[in-house]
Structure formats: C-alpha cells, structure tokens
Amino acid sequence: DIVMTQSPDSLAVSLGERATINCKSSQSVLYSSNNKNYLAWYQQKPGQSPKLLIYWASTRESGVPDRFSGSGSGTDFTLTISSLQAEDVAVYYCQQYYSTPTFGQGTRLEIK
Amino acid sequence: QVQLQESGPGLVKPSETLSLTCTVSGGSISSSTYYWGWIRQPPGKGLEWIGSINYSGNTYDNPSLKSRVTISVDMSKNQFSLKLSSVTAADTAVYYCARHPETAMVTLDCWGQGVLVTVSS
Image (cartoon, rainbow over all chains, first blue to last red):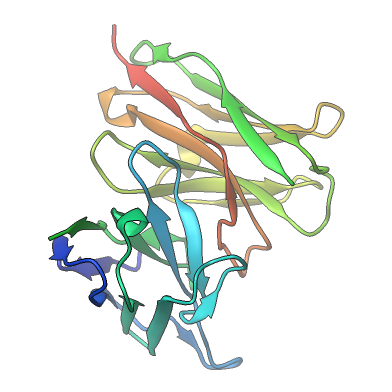
C-alpha cells in the first residue's frame, strides 16, 4: 500500500491568512504515461461527510472556491487556502488513487 | 442532482455479517460513467477505502478487506450493497457510500451522509 502522511496534524490560522497543508506519499503517484499525479484533497466539516476539493493534484472540483489550490508532484503535495474563511474550519485529507486508494491521517484546521 | 443514502443496522454482533445498502436518487446506477463504492471511518480516525462496483458487476477491491467483503448492485432498485463478514470491534465505524468516475480515477465526488455501525455483543 502507498502510505500517505500529512503535516501538520493540526493547524491554527487567523482569518484572512494563508493556510498550508502538506501531504507526502511513500512512493510516487505520478503516472509517467499521462504525466498526471493521482492525488486528491477532501474537506470534512464536523458531522459531515467528506467533500472533494481537488483532483489530479491541482484541478479544483466544480464549485470549489478559488482560494483553495493544490500543488506538487511525485511524492510531495500541498493544499493551500489563500485567505482563510470561518467556513473553512474542517479536517482535510489527501488521498492517492495511483493504486488501491489510501488516505492521509487528516489535518485539523482551526481559527487562531 | 445525485444523492446517496446509506441504510442498515446500527449494531452488529461480533463474528456476524454487517449488511448495508446505498440508495441512489436523482440519477441511474446503471450509468456506465460511474463506480459505486464504500468507505469507512472509525470514530475519531481517518478514512479507509473498502471497494466499489459498476453497473455490470465489475469490482475494485481493497486487498486488505477483500476476503470479507462482498459488494453487489441491484439496478432494479437503484441500490448497491455491502456485506462485511466475521466482524470484530475493529470494524466499528461510520460507513459511507460514494461514487467515482472509473477505477483509474477514484475521486469520490458524491457521498452519502454516512451510517454508524457498532460491533458489540
């Protein structure tokens, strides 16, 4: 299995400031034949099911605000929220789909 | 838009079989575009992929659970189901159903609300 490790485990950011969450995979999730990274990000608000934010490491799902962006390639990826809003308080998960899907342990994002 | 809703017993005894159903509304489960899957989340923990199925019965499994998992589809009822055998306390979790485009793109773009299943005698 590909192990996904997120950092930090929790993060407190002031409203309007940038939040950055990292995700590292135990092996590359870049598929050389199509040059795509098989990496997605999800947001899970308290008491809710996860919501897909980003796929192919950097493609925003329809309807996701553009303050959310994804970057990275190979084994190292980042989810950035450019200007934190109160409604962004949630746990964020990365997930690889290069092989049998696996998820990171989650990063809890709070307001400072 | 498509909505998914899990249903099934909230309490299962150890060694028995957990059975859940996901009802799809607002769209057809027989769409060739999607696979229909199950994911679980133990209380306070992260997410684990269980497996998925498409309209023709092709499955995409998690090898670590494959020996205990059966996923099936009932197109007449627009439902798909999960059976997990020989459960233990470690199988206590919120179980979600969700869909994804294809086996090469397991991006879960529509989820049910989840159902908590507790394994206890």
